[in-house]
Length: 262
Image (tube, rainbow, N blue to C red; front, top):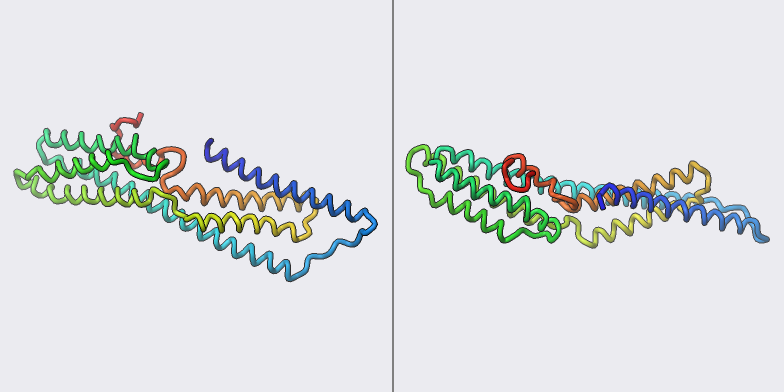
């Protein structure tokens, strides 16, 4: 099921629940009003309106902080991916001063690592929130190949240390990617967000909402907005995405010839 279909389903379900409860509540009140104990509908106390407003404001602040947190984590994860891909690409470019046999071997090792990352490691990272041991071995092979090739002239000597630095940068970025593979928000925060959503939407029924088109429309739009914002937090809570490998595009752009780019 695509993310868009999940979003549409959640928003429609939230609207349906609120509208059905509203209609049923008003029908019950109308039936009670037609009975022998009918009385004038009570007005909503001012203090209750103030409390409902404050609950809504507090929940909006918490929801905004959650969105900002997952957005920042997602941005940091994407920065780590770009850094890793750019560092490996820089290694291949700086190796131009080396003999062709070394360049080809280094490029083969890097392509093997990038292919492992994009094709095998990325789905594993999304589903199991961990990196593959094979990827670690392939990156270690790249580092060994660079470190063990002693420079034979001045140009190679000038490129040698920067190449090691770029490999180290790629390893640091890979470690950052491993740390960011899991969910950003802990379970207790999700409990608070969902409970707050239920309370916030439920409080609209304390305001003597009627069955006019305008009131039902506003109630439906409000519940759909809450559902959309919760979906947004849920989707961004996976820094590298939930339904594909689009977040690995930095590798595909810099290494267009790797397997799996078809």
